[in-house]
Length: 489
Image 1 (spheres, rainbow, N blue to C red):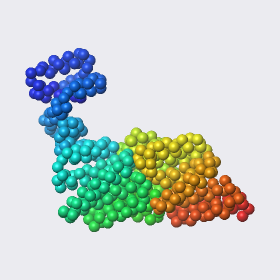
Image 2 (cartoon, helix red, strand yellow):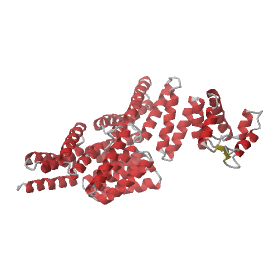
Image 3 (cartoon, helix red, strand yellow):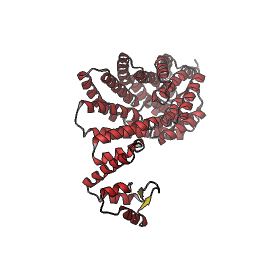
Image 4 (spheres, rainbow, N blue to C red):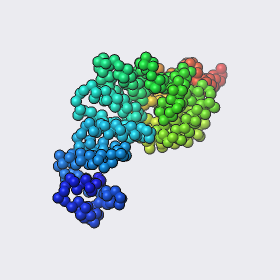
């Protein structure tokens, strides 16, 4: 806690504050921050807590209010430097209007510096303060906007199911606002709610829900003719099509999102769209193009120090390296992905990174390490709901890892579960992958049961061909031929 000497003197005129501070400093309880600032820190957190808790609740609130007002009076032209402190002090003072004002300003400053985790925390504080404000149309509009911002910048770090509840509240408010006033502003607000609902469903791997909300948001954005708003549904629709395995169909949406956001690489949609387009190109056999795209995006976000974007761009590079078959580089890149994502509390990307790390280790013969990495991936995934984005791909990868470990009975059960879940969600690529591992395990477990194994391998081949996943088609064809050759066909 910091105390400005001159503001304290006005508050308690009968005390010689300077003498008291000197006594505390001599007692080694506080220390001077800087000569020119006349401010002090408590030297120990426990001392600070004890001093703070000794004050009556009402007194604490009054002090927080006066400290915040003092900052405004002392630094009227430097408030951007103190918005976080102002938001905190007004929150502790029980002033919801000021808490919201300065929390949102702090969030906006954090966004400008690509500090999305910090931004989401500021928006969360503002949302909590809205509970103490009257239910007016203006407060409803501001709450909807704050919910949208909170969801956007907490993506990948929080539990999607919890944010979906917030989004449902925002949707109800936005519908009511639009019914009362069908202005472009309220239509845009509602469209953005639907896009945030799509984002949360994408984070929890619910492809069909993503398609529903994204197409709804896309239609609303097109009716508005808002190019800036069109970036988000284009990026989301392209991404979900890639994750499902519709690589060719995804490209036009991603290319549009890239074109609309090219001048602002700090927008998550730009690095996101370039990354998913690279995955689509890689799966269709255009490895050199895919590597150039993924590495170019990574270099650009590194230049502007967009740390969350770096973690994401690394994650998008992983499927490209997997398609290429460069397991050594895949292992190295996945480890870097996990390290950076963990530093940024980006749980979703950390789970993806660990999954691809496990896959690389398995292919390189490090089977026990692979099993441990995949278990760690599932543990982190549990923090964001258990089935985060790309979890169907990683579930198929896990079946392949278990196959490499020789656990063929377990593979059959895992592959069966993945096929059922992926089929229900429209995840064609994951379904094809699991069908292939299923067929391979059957051959090893029951060599005489060649017919059933071939059925699964042919299903895999057909599905990969529908995806236009040329490398996976080739791999599956080779396995099918090996099975036939082993049986004398």
